[in-house]
Length: 402
Image 1 (tube, one colour):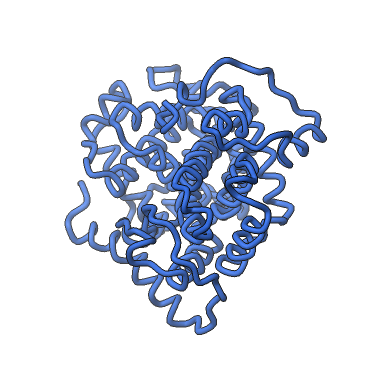
Image 2 (image 1 turned 60 degrees about the horizontal axis):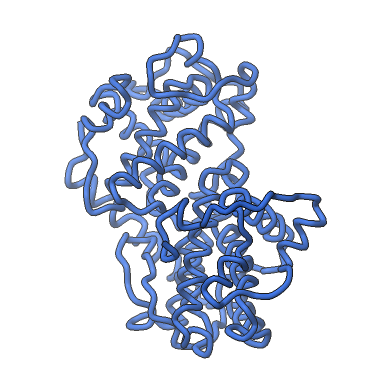
């Protein structure tokens, strides 16, 4: 059955309570830069609301929120490399499709291409419904964490074919068994992916998608009852933790700490936000980033975006102050090896997707940096290259460049 009002209240308030308890047990605060920030909208990852950083949120509060967000991504919202479990079944196979397929094809284990296909499908749905693409990332995080619960039971060698998530005894084991089945049965995986998007839309968008519509989108593969049952099983497997920080929410908080001398030109923070948004969308469909922290993706995308901006609009002194502020406020080191690796992969994905360098797009806005950026130099050292393309970034996504 659909979730009742009381269950919705639990979803909306649990993360906020956890954030409050965490801050009460941590008396030491990071020493942030005491700037006024910029007037952009920051998504509250704890209660789903949004507030203006320039109007009511100071640097100390932003630093506190970043502290809690870092704690969340390190604990309850971390994902495991669950495809290792899936590969323990059969060999590689074809990606899932919504149409009716032979049972032996759907029973094959999932692989990276399966996730890519479902990410593309989810993006098409949210674009058609005019929802935010960040909702796709939220839904895929539900899916990744749900499938990660199968890692423990698989490593222990326990897979009970007779156990179901709806049994009265061994409920937790049944949920993990269902996650393991989703890894080894493509039809079950597709149901979990579609349900994840349904949950993300329900909790993060102003309009709710009915289970009957989702059933129609599956071309009759799943009934309303199957989707509702999967929703409850996934929520229980996730321990009802559905308000984790996204990479884009980290970016928004980072930009709110930008020096006023830079944010005085509204085109600079707006362009940085758009560049970061595009890169985080690319990371959403890449399984490589499943086990990476959201803050890592956020910092990598921000550093790539900053290098696309000419020094005339964001000079080296301001960049140094900004990065030091982010380090003190969040504890994320811009020079960490994992961030360097993420930068290279994000830049490569951007070039393959758009056919452009970020600095080329920025130059069209009269903000572009001249010469090769550090990320481009790192790519060249890795031997990667992408042919140029006349396709504009605005042709591949809804953005301010259209």
